[in-house]
Structures are given as structure tokens and as C-alpha cells.
Length: 395
Image 1 (cartoon, rainbow, N blue to C red):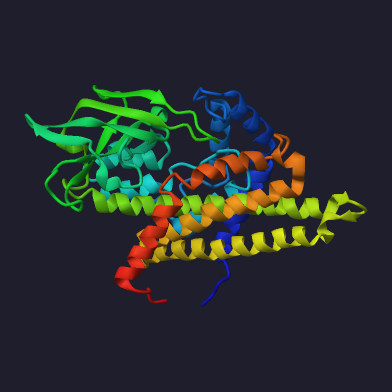
Image 2: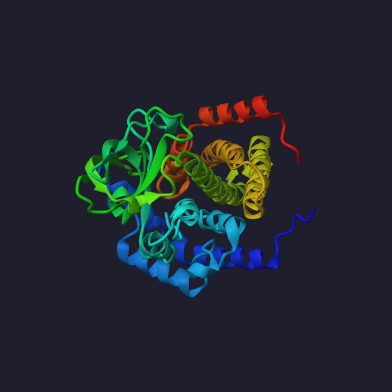
């Protein structure tokens, strides 16, 4: 087994690293201030004009469409390279994302057919349209099978009614991917269907947003007699659950990649501070407690890195269990970054909890990660359930 990164992947990684150092790190003071000042509003943390410049810069240096198929105008470098990109981007707290986001791209590539390719997949692949997934509901968070939103056939149309909750980017999306119950008597494998719902569709409203800890600011989405043609069905009727489950696995891999980048940034700051700060006549690097913080953090980061890289490789080669692997990397990543940033804050003391440094920002951001896309407890249950049913997977 060859564990060395291919040269092409090293080039991608190094290109993103330069982009982060030159373009994103200088924007961190602005990011921290705007996040603090926006309060209850959903003001974008990155000003739109700066976001546009960053996107153009990313295009110019070849960071566009990393995992988009070549026939759709992308580079088709796969999930492994996309994970390297995400990891490097999260060496900064600036919430910059290279479109298109992989999870919805993964879903659209698998399910779009006919004119949906031209209306949704291609413009999404080119970054001309944004999307969001409307899955969670007031009574259905981690338990996606408990959703109540209904889609009924009436007069040759699909009529959707229901409320979605905690939907990220809802007001900034050109279309939503909505999961609804189409056969309430069927089991979960055949009861659900996904629909493409355009912004501005009559009956679709986004009445409420939810200020939250960190940079997240999700929305409530209400579907009140939303009428859709058959052309808005994504995939096959009654076959929505399995593709959505795979899509969630991709998002969990992305979250773990983010945790890798954030934790590595924290560790670099810890090492620099330990070597330069002196207390009681000696550098912090001489303190055993500090040495253990650094040693434990490094080991935990490396262990996650190989889990992430292995899952990405499995996806690119058609191996593995996306649901099981996704639960593992998401669980390990979000709990690891929580420990690492807490050690970093402790090492920096008062400065660690100030807004002069990005550590307090990372601490609040990563706390949300242990809940979104499934809390840690649910992922432990998923892992145990799979192992108890199927036994240990072969290597």
C-alpha cells in the first residue's frame, strides 16, 4: 500500500494553501468582527463583493469544479482531492466555500435526468446556481424517517405541504432539494420522494431564521400547497431515502475535513506559542502539561486524517459503506476538534478567549458541528448497529 500523496494532489493542496495564506488569512479580522456584529440578522459574514473576488481568484488559479465531471466542465479530480481542498481552506476561519458543494452535486449527478440536467445540474456545476437540502423538520432531525411533509397527487400535479426546519442557506438558494412522504403506508425505503423546488415557487416561504452560536444561521421553510410538475421529481417516486442517505455521508466527510483543517491551525498556533511564551522564567514548551496537549492533539489529528483519506479513497474507487464510514469520520472529527481547540484556548489563557485570535471563534463553530448532520450519540448508535448486525468489515 502506498500512503504517499500523488504529485497531482500535492499540487492541489499547495495551491489551496497559498490561496488561504494570501487571500483568506488577511480577512480573518473582518470575519470575526462581522460575525460578532450581525447579532440576530442573517448578514453574510463575507461581504458579497469580497466573495465575488475570492470566487474569481479561485477560478483564475484552477480551483474550480474539483469534483465536477469533465463533461460538465469540471476537473473530475474526485472526493479525495476535494477533501484536501476543504482541509486546507479550513486552516482559516473565513467561511469561504468553493462551489459547487459536493453533497448536493453528488445527489444531482446521480439523479438528474432529461431537462433537469440543463436546468439544475449544469448551472449548479458551473457555480451559476446555489442549492440547499430541505430535510429536517420540527419533529424529524436526526431521524430523517420521521418527516411529515406530504406530497400528494392532485389533478396531475404534486402538491407539497409541510414545514422544514434548520435549513442552511435557504434564502440564498436558487432551488431546494425537498424530501417528502409520497406513500405514508410504505416502509421508509419506498415512502419518500425528493423534489426540486425553485425559488419563488408559489406557496414556498421562508418566514423565520434562527441566530445560533457560531457562524450558522439556518431557516424555517414552509410549503403551503406548493404545486409541482412531474419534471420536478428528482430520481424515482418512492426512491428518495437511499440517495439522501448517501448524500448525508458525503456531507459528513466534508465536515470531518473541515475539522482537520481547523485542528491543524490550532496545533500550529499552540506550537508557536509554547516556543515563544515564557512564564516563571521558562518557556511554556518546558511544561509537561503543554507537551501532552501538543502530543495528544497531533496524534488525534493524524488518526482522523487517515480515516478521512481512506473514506475519500473508498468513495472514488467505489468501495466501502458511505453510511458507516460517514458516521465514523463525522463523530471522530467533531469530537477531536472540540478537544484540540479547548487545549489551545487553555494554552493561550486570556488571549485565547479574546477576539484578537480565531480560537474562540473556532470553539463556537465546532460546538455546532457535534449536532448538525447528526449528533455524536446518533452516530455511535449507527456504528454499533451496523457492527452488531454485519460484524467487522474486511480490510
